[in-house]
Image 1 (cartoon, chains in turn orange, blue):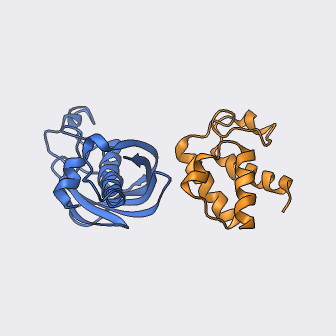
Image 2: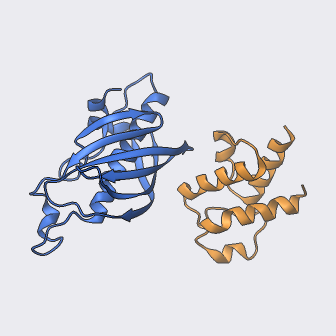
Image 3: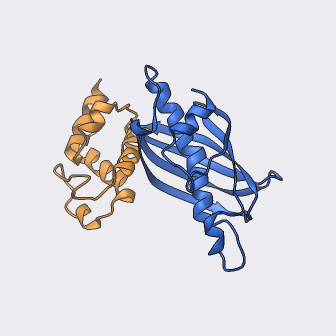
Length: 83
Length: 149
């Protein structure tokens, strides 16, 4: 799975929870879930659970805390998929 | 953790405590009851000369029994070295989706039954149902909140 595919999948996962739709227009590694997309902390949990299902991985509390941007999420997904 | 200590750890008091008894609780869900006193303040205004329990109050009752009581129980299991008290708990409602089927009048007792969907990263999401004293479905839906100590 390429970086670009993963990023597209992340974008599709977060879309239902996004409160600031303009934030999706230039979705990239640096897109911050909270400041750019205005996703609340409760919906961020749903994002994580959807990421787990989509990529068949398990995300622990430490990884969750480090998942602030789409790029962070992509790196964590890649690391978990390798292990 | 016994039923009384769960209720006493709840961060609510009258007139906004909507839990009388817990009937059953385990890692998967909670069942409890509440009797809506006839002199509850909201009956004076909801509705004029025609008191019916507001849907938001039914929702609150479902949240307190179905989600918060269960959350206190689950948090206590995670931190079994010390008993959790009201001061320890941080709590916030995050979402509700409820369908209503029957009214609840002043003086009626309800039973709330919840089933945990998940409790992860401090978010507890439950499927919750409320029944009247004839065991008829009053309302049902999904309630989620953030809970941590």
